[in-house]
Picture 1 (cartoon, protein in one colour):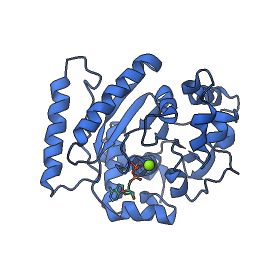
Picture 2: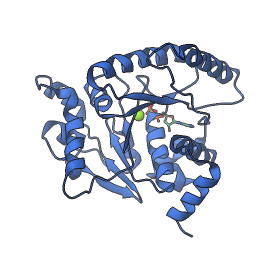
Picture 3: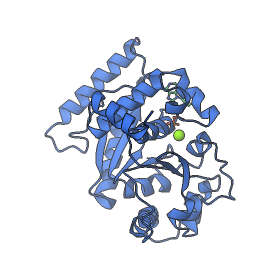
Picture 4: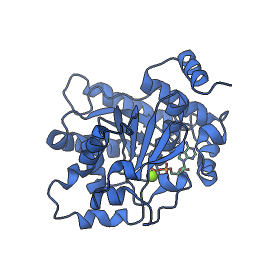
Length: 282
Ligand code: ADP
Ligand code: MG
């Protein structure tokens, strides 16, 4: 099971969009996917048409009331489950302030769910949609993740933000989770025509290249070949409670998230096509 934290302390860079649609693309390739909404803003939850009211079993209950993770799991689509957020998740940070080992709570709940005799928590991928901050919720994500994936929007000074983020991931991982790896950086809201996109990409590649062999926290991190282009369908689909593969399977957005899923799986376009046909026979 690969547990991937989608992280960037900046908002509006495509964390939630990538969680939803990368998850959907992985599911199309036959992978079993669990999406977890760690953000009190609950955009991922709302994206799937679930109301983040305190009435539901959410990550808040999992963290604060010791509700088992399995009790908060919602099946939302073929091969896709969701652990929702709720508006009271914002209070969890304060309510847990005196709890010892509060950064490790979610990791413990995950381990308990995996060990559960029902065998119900059986996923190939767990994707964590982190809030745009480095608070307790993100720390819980980093503590339980095996990999970090950083969506980055190419704009002025974006690289400085990502460099800072990578250093933080390194510090956190040294203390809480030595297995944690940076899976890579994916450029989002990409406009191939814009000079700035090309400049930021060159800068980013140079930055990663210069770190090779230097034992920097991000040495060996990859910049994904796949760029997520700006595509209006990706912005529209949440309003319909759907991911891009359902909302518009022929869109650039669907093509880009399928390509990213294939890069993460390490498979070719032909292998992907075969897997998708096997998963969803006509
Ligand atoms: P974050 O979770 O990092 O705050 P979001 O995924 O919510 O960012 O994206 C911010 C906004 O940009 C949302 O309105 C989303 O629909 C839109 N968006 C994200 N990626 C794209 C894209 N590739 N093309 C067009 N709109 C996008
Ligand atoms: Mg978000």
